[in-house]
Image (cartoon, rainbow, N blue to C red; front, side):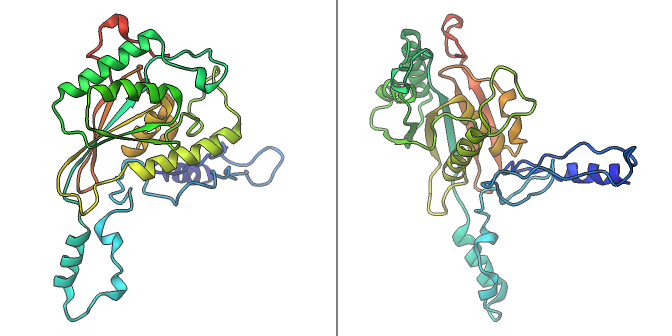
Amino acid sequence: MAFRQALQLAACGLAGGSAVVLFTAVAVGKPRGGGDVDTRAAEPPAWVGAARPGPGVWDSNWDRREPLSLINLRKRNVESGEEELASRLDHYKAKATRHIFLIRHSQYHVDGSLEKDRTLTPLGREQAELTGLRLASLGLKFNKIVHSSMTRAVETTDIISKHLPGVSRVSTDLLREGAPIEPDPPVSHWKPEAVQYYEDGARIEAAFRNYIHRADAKQEEDSYEIFICHANVIRYIVCRALQFPPEGWLRLSLNNGSITHLVIRPNGCVALRALGDTGFMPPDKITRS
């Protein structure tokens, strides 16, 4: 019975990926020493949200912008009834599609002692030029560029911006590189301190909630937005947006200067059109450092 209960608990994962619940192994029956089996679960980080539907169940209100969730039904006028409700729902309903282009920074000097010394390599500058040319060739009317405040992301943005004249740019600390959540399975060559997951995870989750959501109801036309940041941030955002288990972010791989394209429809549905695309680069220009 204990084993069956454990399976039921394990099935109640988070489709939206806003929290991590770790279950201890449960044995069938009782331990040799007698007594009940310990099924205590590790506490999730303090910044995680409330539980959501289990795996395979899409949470249509993942961005908390589902029209019905924005209406206070207690204030509903009984006399006007359904007609008033329909009018209020329409007021909060998104009309436009958001196209999110997530760009990983180009190759940089990884041996820099300080963050400001980790500038782009000559090859990295070439990669940024190629990415800028690719974005420009799409013929889209880009609305803005939001970039990480780290040196390698700023320099990548400087080069890409030359190919997209007139597109405004904004710098943010939210998109800086970090450790979003402990990966599963773990890797032996990269083991940040637990506090780094706690601090970086909250910030990167804040970046996701701030930038990745359906269009505002006031937005009339489809938008095309560029976010230039880092591999860990992009991989985590992709998992969260698709409601895949977020701890699987490290299973994805992104090349330098690559383009990842997310589409967010007015009804909240999300699609991944491209992940880490570098098909526009010659093979000898492709790196993952």
